[in-house]
View: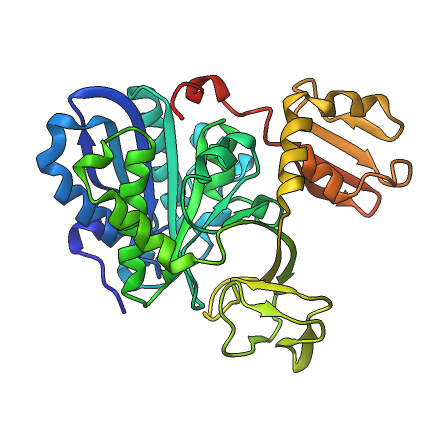
Length: 392
């Protein structure tokens, strides 16, 4: 299995580049899961290679290591998934000085959170966040992104599949926290954990990101080589997709994913995907399987995804641009959750016409309160569009 260097393991800041020319600040975070070292290895290599280019470098780059104790042990996490702890309650505890030294992941959360906050205070924007991961199944490289027009526009630059809406199925992810702040923020999955190609994919992604953010000119690197590397690995899959189903493993459930599934694999209705306590789990429609679980830890058994037609992306853009959602609280059964007007509460008994697809068009992703109510959050409200409008 790929190993990380001692420097990368023991230091929260893997490396930093401070350019001599004013520009954006990029934060790359690798190893949020301790069994995913490829991103850290790639960051360490790229930053060392770029040291000689400081004179022409614009802005700042920070490479941050995630779950240090888990990285040392080569395990996903010790007690809690660090990439599920970024909820407001935990962040409030950190702000209030609450200390839970008995929980290793909470200690990591606190240190990473303070590291990010310090960077946001010390540096100038615009800020970009990149969360680097790998998967337990065989996969082509891809991007996961919270669904805002700002994120869509920026991620469209990369020649890889783009998955929208994962925030609807994962609570407490780092990306949800950074998107709540309004910054461009998304995840890159570089390949399978143990596959050396995952490091190469991450290196290509990092270099492309530096160019797309304006940190370095494409003429200073092998831009075409890195672009073609990712493009050649994802040909035929370069599109927007959305997650429409997640199989969540229950506590004490004996879940076993059937062997041989690869990410983005087309599956047919009735396909035997996995077993739960010895009983088969079947697909109920034709679609693609996404991130099937082939590791001991984790409660996301698999996801199901489908390609998003371009017409829906275009309609969505128009509706969000004209702020069509502002009229929704005038309808029966719909109300704002607060004066911030970035979250709706939908009474499904009254507003039966509010389907998830319709809400997705407007930029809302749902969290069900109970069987009768949906609480839906709008990603557009927080976006700092004005900070990026002249950059791409």
